[in-house]
Image (cartoon, rainbow, N blue to C red):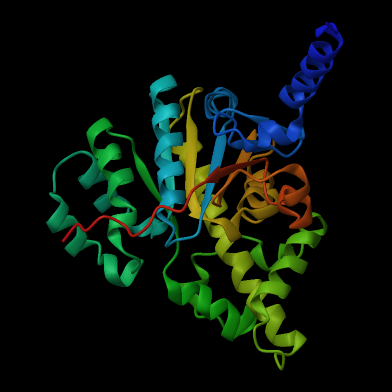
Length: 311
C-alpha cells in the first residue's frame, strides 16, 4: 500500500499556509480590525489595548449608520473600563450648551426635559435613537460629555460672508488667527478629498469651493480647539478624549486632528473608521477602494438595520 505520509505532509503544509495567510485573517470575524500602518488584521481586544495608550481617540461615523454608533459605544466601554478619566467630545452639540450637557450627565435634569431644553431636532436633527445608547452609558457612568461644535450660523457665515463680512458675534467663535491658517500644507490630501466629494454641482467655481472649504476648516478648527480645551479644564494626566464625529472631520487623520496638533502639539491621536460591509475585506479589496488611507484602524462591521424605536 502506498504511504500516505507525503500526501499528509503536503496537506499539512497547505493548511499551514492557509492558516498564516493574510486573506484568511481578513475573513475572520475574530480579526475585524485592519491596522493600516501595520498592514495586518487584529482583534477588537487588541485595538482596545492600543487605544488605551492614546490621548485622543476619534471614532468616525456615518450619522445614520447604527453599526458605526455601536462601534463608538464599544470603544467607550473599553476605554472607560480601563480608565475612569475618559470624557467624550461630541460634534452633535455646541460648546455653549455645556451647562445642559453637564446637568444631564450629573442627573439634575431628566431625558425628556433635556431633549426639549437642548433643542435636539434643531441642534442636530438626526434620529436620537442612534445616539441614546452612548448618552445612556455616559449618564450611568458619569462620563462627561463636551460639546465641540458651533451654531450652524457660524459655519454658514464663514462660507457666505468671508473674513471681512462675518458678523462680530459669529466671528467670536473662531479661534484667534483662524483666517491666517485656513490652508495648511499637510492637509493637501484632505482638501483634495473635500473638493471631490463636495463638488456635486459641476458648475461650482473654484471661488465657491474655496468658501466651502473655509467653512469646513472653521468647523474642524472650532471642534479641535474644544478638544484641547477639555485638557485645560480637566488637569488629569490620565485624561482621554473620545471624539464622536462624522468621518469627514477626521479622515486621513486630518481635519480635527490637524488642528488639535496645532493647538496642543504632541498628543497621541488615533483615528478609528468603522466600515460597514457584509464581510471583512481582504487587503486587495481595501487597496482597491483606497480605504487604507482613511484612518489608523478600519473596523469592519455588518449592516445593523433600522435604529431601535425610542418613541
